[in-house]
Length: 279
Image (cartoon, rainbow, N blue to C red; front, side, top):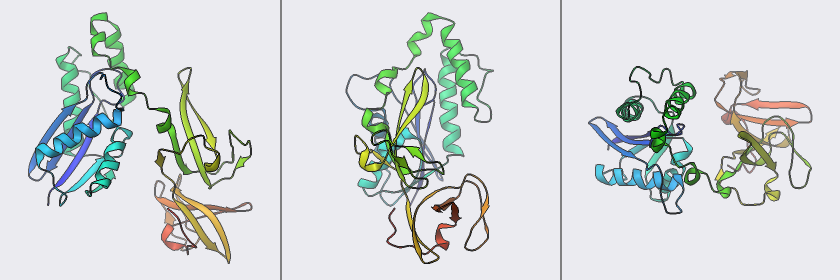
């Protein structure tokens, strides 16, 4: 059994092809692919990326006995679904190590080959500043516009902008029925841009105009002091003590979030007793 890592680079840059890599560290095997700047068919960015990665997997001879660690980025959402449907063993991880290094170095090399200053490099994953410098360099010379990506074909179809998830600790207003969406309850988020600014609309699941394409919802129906509470499992925003075992739940860890009137219920998912738990 081999362990493979799938990573990308350059997705946040407005120019130059995204780099996709498939890497095995032991033995060291490296496969690379580039997304085109544009394409003519109606496939989404995620579908194009899936095709490219599957081609690399076929070249590498990846089998269902192998294990794949895949970047959690949206560019691989179609791949995540394909791996599950086709019986592969995989999980998402925050990518580091050889795969990350190869992807970033390959992206850097392609822009240097186009004439970008070699002394300007990505530092400490500060992508925003680095890509701004690449944008500025492109704008200096109209002849460099040929490196710009086609933003139109990379736009998500409307149906992909709806996400089913758990609401945070703030009540929100449903854009359809105008009633409150309670804290720590299921919510559909529609993400879009308006005059260049990121915005969101929120809906009760039953009020959503389309069935959400992505499901991040983890519900937690818990028995709390003899009462059934309907909460959700979210990443903890700050380190807080579990209300069952009183041990700390580190920030970023998955935790049960629920409310009973004004009381906030919080703790390790494994510490609670569940009642017909979903998700």
